[in-house]
Amino acid sequence: MTARINMFDNEFAAKFGKRFAGVSLMIQSSTLPGTIQELVSIRASQINGCGVCIDMHTKEATAGGESPVRLNLVAAWREATVFTDAERAVLAFAEEATRLADTHRGVSDDTWAQVSKHFDDDQLVALICLIGMINAANRMNVIARTPAGSYEPGMLAAMMK
Image (cartoon, rainbow, N blue to C red; front, side):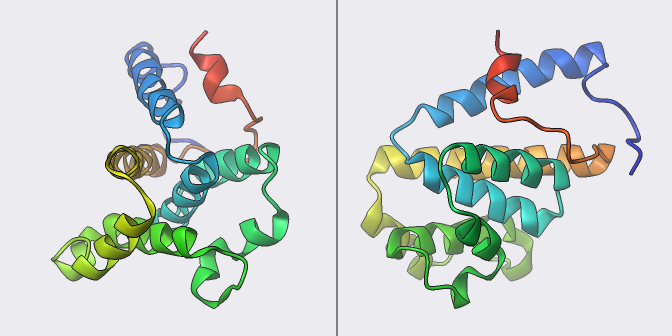
């Protein structure tokens, strides 16, 4: 795949990217568990077809100790036995929040109730922000046709230095 535009070589995009990465790092530092953050980011990126984000988040999850079996089953989480109830709740939440236009009702009350059982208000806010950010990143990368495969764990944090 060839990128339509290199978002990393453009001065405006580089400034925006630094701020965007800063917000992402703020979410990473929240009390929302890192494993949950990566699972949500992977699932939203799968739904949106964002290869570069799938590349980034599977590699970050692997570097964080996530198992290949669980990563390979994220797309089929409903049929998998390797996810906790809390993980299943956030995967359902991520799907509904990513597919807002599909149902014209947003996140269902049942899904909200399930995710609320497992996370406090600060974690729920971080989860909402995370889903907004990953969906924005997915859209920018898909529009620009940013190619996947070259991400190395820690690159996002390195952008901030």
